[in-house]
Image 1 (cartoon, rainbow over the protein chains, first blue to last red):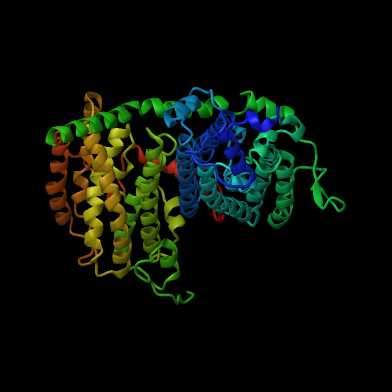
Image 2: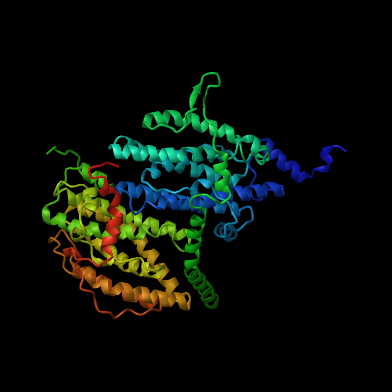
Length: 318
Length: 267
């Protein structure tokens, strides 16, 4: 039987939107698997923003100048805003925020493993901006063209702020590298810790990433993990030179033939360890958010009770 | 001294624009600005502790926003105060010891639970609202410019704390009880806000004006939220003379630790 007869008009219309690079909107029909993939990806991104507030929040009270304190506060606040914005995008797919948040604080949902690393020094505020936000941008810029409309539009706005954050991180490291020997050591030591985990943010090598193909066919994802990782390394090398920091990879060198930098094998067992929950801070991060949520339950209940009473009063009045 | 050239333009006043301008505060104006700057700085530091710990994400954003506004006020005020002695905002924030801080004691009080934070925010927002409104008419044009900018921001802070006062006061039995306890906890430190702080005439704001505004506003709001205006003896205070409650030392230790480990460093 010809395949056309087994696909419904709805499915054909969905495929036409994808093929023509048009946007799928909340009211359009979409395959259940497409919806699920999006909810998982968008909510994971939202969770990453929310958990990502903690490693940087760690330095708000100790930032070494008032200007840096203000920049850091604004950045962490942006992350909360991104989280809210992404939860809204995910809600257009029919999963409500409370459900997603519950999955986060009960440890059922995933978020980016990078936030399970600790931030023992001020230079980590620089490394997170330069390396982590830098990797996030490489990942996210193509998502601005994601086939699902609300997601693509959310990413457009988020990417603008992320590139601002990356520049701020670069400036923190630059200032340290121009400073005292102790400051320079602080910067280099931090880059040494964050470099490999940042490269792993793009996910496992393509041959070990079974879900990528379908996401690329649906035009949610536009480039493979390895392509994005290469793009990131190519971007980093000249920036590292400008900073005067050494990237901790002995195999890193320009390959004239490929027109790219070659780089060494990453330790994927480390990646899988953190993913499996055995990172530096997995339990701590989730527990902190959970505690804030539980300790704030009475506040949210009060707001609900107040709102209900207001509605009741309005009914009586009308 | 290198002659400074730029003049301060009202409306765009920031710590940077003050630092680059030609203005230099007289010693008594600098002392007044220092007290106000410390109030804003110490409260911003306290509110910063809420970030990633708030009852809901919207409050992480809101409290962070308020902290950022206050930090902005503090940076402008401290920069201006520093012009009298050739010190930067960071010299003043990071390299003074506890008895040199001039904030009133209310601003250093711990966050407590969310209700106690809201109680403190209600009191300070009403206070700031009138303070900055009055200060925007100061004969000192720098203070007037800082205050004019702050007024718009504080207006939002007041609304935020008022909305939560109503929700907690009228919400549930538990929230009502906690809101009342929050008011009780901050109340001993209210009186100090309205004591004479040696504000230079015409430059600073008359504390009697601030007290009158507070007394016609706050009891009404508390009453509207079904709560009772506390009748608790005022604490002795002394913040403007460098006398602080025991909670300021640890706050400063945390705030200053990194800067002091690297004296002279730029960040």
